[in-house]
Image (cartoon, rainbow, N blue to C red; front, side):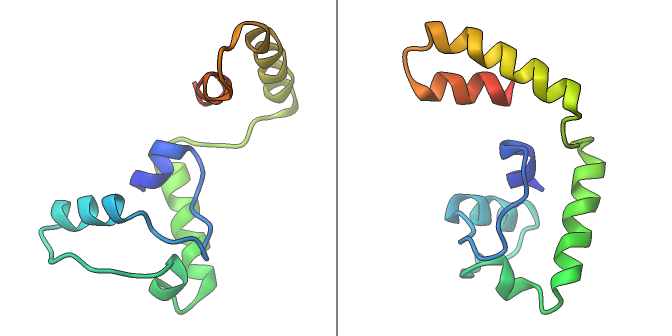
Length: 96
């Protein structure tokens, strides 16, 4: 859930879990630090991963943009692109 909250999207099941995220979660649960390669190693059943991601999205009130939201985002980014000094500025605008 920390990754989802920070990035606004679930992790790819084959992506490596960022070590700082993993360390923070282990500290929050007061467990010893673990090292895993990917979410795939945590979930023997793929459907469980998707169910957990869906629960986290609901809990955090994250949802996909509807067509009107996509249209609005494109308009905001088009205006921001005229003044952005760096692509990271546009990414931050989109995230906001």
